[in-house]
Structures are given as C-alpha cells and as structure tokens.
Image (cartoon, rainbow, N blue to C red; front, side, top):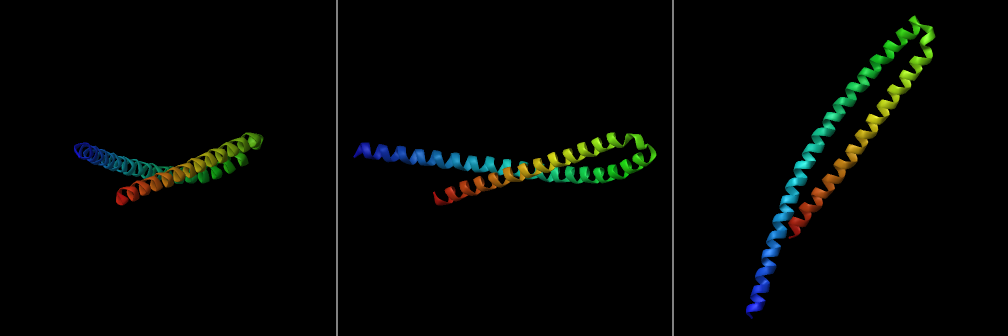
Length: 117
C-alpha cells in the first residue's frame, strides 16, 4: 500500500509540474503573440508608408521622364525595383499574418489543454 501511495504522490507531483509548465508555455505564447501582433501592426504602418511613398515616387518619375526622355529605360528599372520591393513587403506581411495565426492557434490549443486538465 505504501508503494501505491508513493506512486500516487509521484503522479500528483508530475501532474502539477506539467500543469505549471503548460501555464508557463501559455504565458510565453501570449507574450510572443503580443509581440507578433505589435510587429505586424508596425509592418502594416510601414507598408502604408511605402505605398504612399511609391505613389509619390510615381509622380516624381513622371516629371523626370518628361524632363529627360533619355532616362526612360532607367526609370522603368526603378519602377520595376519599386514594384518588386512592394511585393516583398506584401509577402512579408502575409508571412507575419500566417505566423500570427499559428501562434494564436497554439495559444488556443494550450488554453484548451489547460482547461481540460
């Protein structure tokens, strides 16, 4: 009977340790989620600034093309590079949204697991 009591005590201690570890993980996930959400909001602001600057750059490019016809090819390259940069920023934003979704799901899963325990 004493061995059974010792085993039960060990099981109880392990369960308590696991529950504490899960709570720590949930706390860390919540913190990471907040960091990702903040970074994603910042990225959205950066993207808006880039889009605004790109629109302004388009007007500037039109003026430069009008003043210097010989630079048309170079300006087309600049426009292509600007579009490429905007695409990369959009891809990064999409990647961050996917990561945020995964962190949210993981946090939900941990919360559900803790609730089940």
